[in-house]
Length: 197
Length: 197
Image 1 (spheres, rainbow over the protein chains, first blue to last red):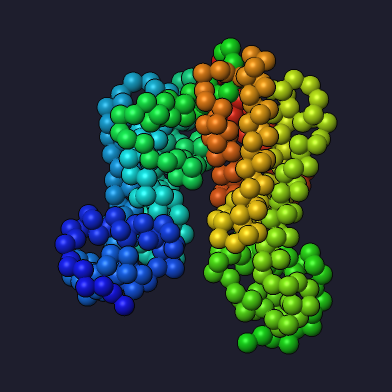
Image 2: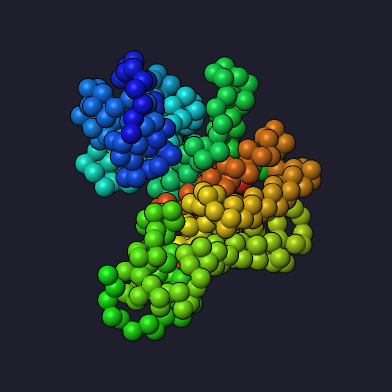
């Protein structure tokens, strides 16, 4: 059953609705019927915009991935000492996560049952590997500790950063809380919780 | 449809099967039929052991919660400077997580749709709050940095620790990797990734 709401969706606004439903029900648990109910338009109206739910998933995770990969092209990630670059990438990853919260949340929950999901997992791995290589370079420079396995450090760093999708509640852009949170993550990840260092 | 396998389950072995199914399909997505298929015994055989899937969930998350709360009663969590106690709790939380991986994984995925799930969430919050209070005491002692909000630090610490359920693959107890991983988490959380401190 669908209501008779007129279809005034743009690709972006329909995507926003779909991402919320995916995050709520899980991608596997979402049918076109669920999407139609949430959007308040008929299934055929949705098919007017996209070929199906997998296209919506692909667009949604692409938005998250594009945001993350764009960080690696920023001057702060390209120039200067590796440790500064990796701090920049960490800070910006937190910011992209806050700015694109539902899209990154969906990306982090992808399991790999469909081609699109496996592609998304592969891209996530590529991003993590690029950060790993930066960490390695910073260890080689003597700026990061050499007594910790890089693969484990990368996972724990992303464990910390990605946990935001579980507890961060959106704040207006430019708010003090947002800036502080990005600072706090960088400080704890690189300097730790101990005082007097 | 169930096979005719004889019911040789104990409460523990049946629980282990159920936890795997819950983690695979999600608790909401698991029916008694799924449990019956996975266990290879009839639904009525399962009802011989438990009143239903919610009792299995309660037992499973209790096992995880009991393991976590027991840490807080250990001498290492009770005696000495707060910073040492919180380091002990962090290290032991990683160990409980590795020892009880499927049970803690389930606990961390609980959403709060049923009474048991809400109870589990409440108990998790209590555990987090006790760790928060230890962190606060360590800040008051001057051992942990005072320039970071305790609530955020607690969340990021657990974000790092709990991420293990996403990527840790079980290793034999007493293996070098296991001990190193607990060390690494404590080191990164308290001292950070920076070298030369």
